[in-house]
Each structure stands twice: as structure tokens, then as C-alpha cells.
Image: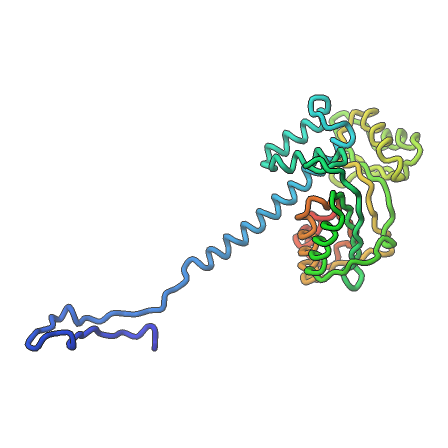
Length: 297
């Protein structure tokens, strides 16, 4: 049947003999297939919601990492740890759930939100042919975490295998600049006085970046912060990709595959940090931002 065809309701069979059908009752009606007027609008709404949710997740990861770091460095009691108190206040203002904040503080003390002892674990991941990743994990149940994360990797088209040789283990501390603060030379002169300092750089976003031997990271971070009264933005032991093993990301398809993997892994609070040997190739800045927001270096 043509859905837009007109037809008449002349219900003569229902009329008794001698009855007359008035003209208004035999008028024509148009029957047109219904349009899904709200479908396109809902698709756009879902897309906007997905983008917003990803931004929220990225912000939450940033806040919880900072809270965990300050808890680890200066203790879990906000009354005696102003850096932690400020980070918690900022996270609360940004609507980070209380459960995530409490969990981040607990992780800084080496335990889960339920009080169970956390154990460190590393997962090495390969995205064929040459994308290498390492995930640093802290969990109270290694078997469960390994099972869950392997499923995420497989779903994204990755493999769990040996990739550590693509990276070097290094300490990395980032300090926020302040008005009237030290120059790069001042920070360099102070840093080289401490055993284990490897390099000092200006950070692209401002402030200073210091590379250290892993075992010396905490001592150097505290010394520089105290000497110049600088706020610590990051202080972590990283898996830094070796220069000769870095791989360019050149296609939108690879961006989507990696984004599926990285965002999937980030949904698990056990994943403390993610490292990859990738660098921006011919993809756009927006496409690169999709990936960079998930990785720690």
C-alpha cells in the first residue's frame, strides 16, 4: 500500500436501507507514514552526552591522581596536609563523587576504599603491529583485575604480551610556577646537588619538569618543593617510551581503536597510570587530544 495515498470512508455497508450518507462523512483522509521527528535530535543528544561523560571521566582521573599523590607524600589527614585539603576541596567543587575522593586518599596509603591492602601489578599490552602500552595497576584482587582488564584489551583488538622493553623506568616531577619564583637556572642548580637528578626542563604548560632515577624521586620532589615553595603537580615513576621505539598515529581508525582501549582501561579505578609509545603523526590535534587525555606520558 502507498502510505501517502488518499482514500474515502464510505461506510455504506454499515448503513441501513434508505439511509443517506452526508457529504461530510465521505470526505477524503490522507494517510502518511509517521516520521521519527525526535530521532535525529536524540542522536545528537547522545553524542553530546558521550563527549561530556568523557570530559568528566578525564577530570576525575586528574583529581584522583593528585589526591593520591598528596596522600602518599604528606599523609591522609587533611587537617595536617594543606595540599591534600586543597585538592579535595577542588575535586568536591568539580562534583567528583565522595567515594572516588575517599578511594584516592586510601590508595595513597596503600589500601583500597574498604581497607584491604593494595598490591602493585603491571600489565603489558600490544596493539598490532607496533603500538606498545604499559598499565600500572594497584588492586586488592589480582585475579579479578587481570580477568576484567584482559577482556577490555581483547575487545579493543589488543593483546597482552611483553612490551616493557619499549620503555625505560624514570622518575618525573612537575612543579607549578609562581610569581616571583625561581628561574630554570635556579631550579637546575639546586637539583644537581641531589643525587639521582637526570635532567631539568621547562614544562610546556609552565613550571618545571625534573627527571630522576626512580628510587630518588620522592626525596628530590620534596627537596625542590620545600626549597622554592613550589606546588607539586605530579610526582610519579613513569614508563617513558624509548625514542627509537615510538610509533606515529596516522589514521582515524587507529585513533578510534586506541581510544576504545584507553578509555575502557580508565574506567577501572585499579588502573593507576597508562603509558604508550605513541606520538602524533598525521592525525588532527582534536584526534590526538582524544588519546593524550588518557595517557600519562
